[in-house]
Amino acid sequence: MSQLDLEQLREKVDAVNLQILSLINERATVIQEIGKIKEKQGVNRYDPLRERHMLNLLKDHNSGPLDQKTVDHIFKEIFKSALDMQEEDQRKALLVSRKKKSEDTIITINGERIGEGTPSFIFGPCAVESQEQVTKVAEAIGGKGLRLIRGGAYKPRTSPYDFQGLGLEGLKMLKAAAEQYNLAVVSEIVTPSHLEDALPYLDVVQVGARNMQNFELLKAVGQINKPVLLKRGMAATIDEFINAAEYIIASGNDQIILCERGIRTYEKATRNTLDISAVPILKQETHLPVFVDVTHSTGRRDLLLPAAKAAIAIGADGVMAEVHPDPAVALSDAAQQMNLQQFDEYYDSLMKFMKQYELKM
Ligand code: PEP
Ligand code: MN
Image (tube, rainbow, N blue to C red; front, top):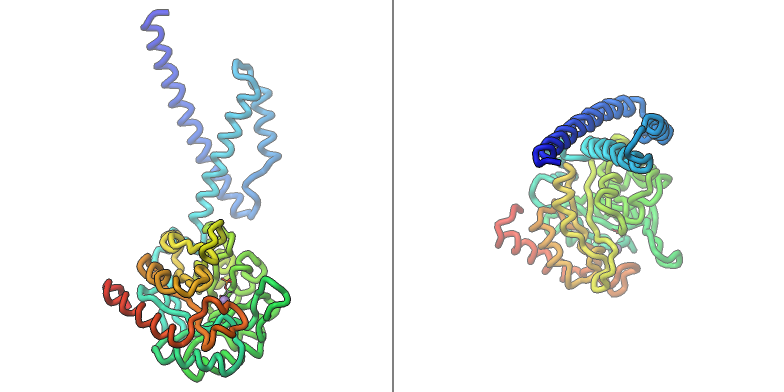
C-alpha cells in the first residue's frame, strides 16, 4: 500500500468520524425533543422496552464486520449519553436552582432579612427544658438585638431512652419566652402529624438532619406558609440535599433556608465534619439562603468561634449555635452548648471579627 493510499484512507476515517459526530448530535437533539414530550406526559424518561427494541433492530441489520457485542456496547453508551444529558437538563430545571431563578431568595422573619448579604444568627438551647431556662436564653439573645431563638421541643434522639423533648408544652414555653423579648421561634418538627398543633407556636419550622429525606414531612412543610430551615442529612450528598429542598419548593413553599450541619466521615476529632465548601456550592447551585450550624457540626465548644468565622468568611447567610444557661446539666448536647457568659464573649468576638475584616454586618 502506497503512502498516498494510507493518506486517502485516513481522510476517509476523518470524514466518517465527522459524520458519526453529526449523527450522534442529531440523535441527541431528537432525544431532547422526546424528553420534553415525556416530561409533559409525566412519564419516566428511561424506557427499558424501548431500549431493547432499538438494540434488536440494530442486531437485525448488523452485517458486520463489527460483532454484535461490540455494536451493543457502542450503542448502549450512546443511549446512556442521551439520558445523562437529559438528567443534566432536569437538574438545571430544579425550582431551587440558580439557573431557574438568578436572584437570591430573601426571607423576612420578624424584621430580619435572611439572605440579603448580612449574616443572621439563630441561637438557643438544644432542647427546651423549662420556662425559666428558655426565658434566660431569650433575654440574652434579645439583649443583643437579635431576632431569632431556637430550641427543640420534639427531639430526635439516637436512644429511645434519652430525653425526647417536652413536645407541645415545650413549644408553648419557647413561644412565651420569645414573645417577651420580641424573638421569632425556630423549632424542629419530626412528623407531619405534629404540624397543625405546633404551627401556631412556630415562626420557622426546622426539618432536622435525620429527617432530610422524610419525603412526607418535606411535602407537608411545603404546604405551609412559614419558612422552613432544612438541615443537611448526616450522610447526604449536596445533590440529595438540594433535591430535599426541591420537595419543599415543589409543594408550594419557596421560603427555605438550607443549613449545613456537618456530615459523618471517618474523622473522630469532631462530632461531624463541617463541610464548609458546601456553603459556596449551595450558594452557586441554588438561590436559597445558607446557614451553618456550628454546634452540631463540630460538637466542640472550642471550635464554635473559628467555625462561625469560617462560615461568615466563606459567604454563609447565617450561623446557628446552641446556648444554655447551665450546659453542664443540659438534658441534651451538654458538651457543646455555650453558657450565657461564653455566649456574650462569643458574640462579641464574632462582631469584632466582622468589623476587622470589614464584613457586612
Ligand atoms: C438540632 O438542631 O436540634 C438538631 C437535632 O440538629 P441536627 O438535626 O442537625 O442533628
Ligand atoms: Mn443539639
